[in-house]
Length: 297
Image 1 (cartoon, rainbow, N blue to C red):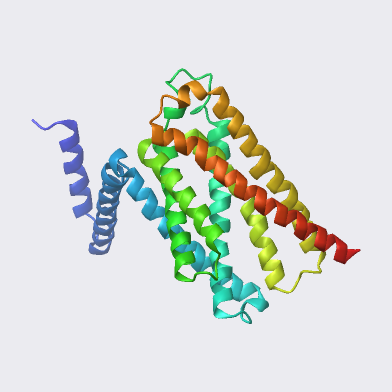
Image 2 (cartoon, rainbow, N blue to C red; image 1 turned 135 degrees about the vertical axis):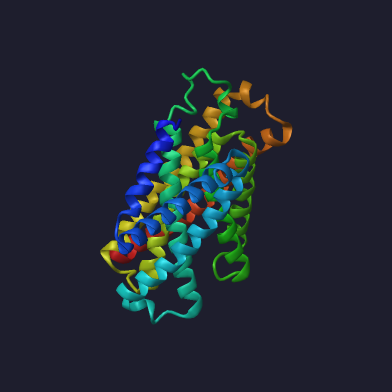
């Protein structure tokens, strides 16, 4: 005696056989596509997005996203910006490289704000263990995408050194890469990692300033407004934010002290080094803004 599922399958097969050859071929094609779709979903669920493989999948995803951002930037720039064709080869590479960093900055800033402010993953009111040891599949995956970006950008800086940035950029990227990669792999200190990554919010404005300068628009109103935006964005996202991070670490020092000695050094050391670099860059920003305002006057 057949069960309901077997009877249903038999009825479906009989129905298919009654159709015309063309309809039967179409049905077989649809069934084959559905079978491949099921296999793909199984591969993604059981392997690519299985917890042990998340870091490696996300890093590869980040590298692939960087390649797409590079190509998309080149296509859009060549089509919409007449000045792009007149650039030198290394300028076109830097133009597209800054497209990568802009895409990453927008993505990681949105995700960092979500985890730090809107998600309850790192909330002090959540009774789910110490905040410095909390992580999730999504938070780990996002950090992996960022690791992929830092690997690509650091590789390009080394390959075209020093055209895409000097030693200060190498130091900044190495520190960021090590800190983000460790937080991704260990699941420790992800809250502070995301707090620091919020500072990437200043990157689009910095890149826009370079685009305006390279396009010969230093005397435009857009260049002046951009300088003012950079000043306030840098002040908030890279100076006041880091001050708050130090305050947060102080309030949770009893939790931080439970981490491994090397990790404690990273929690205190990485933001401190980046904060000093941010202060030095801020001095250059203030100097540049004063120079621009003086020329306008």
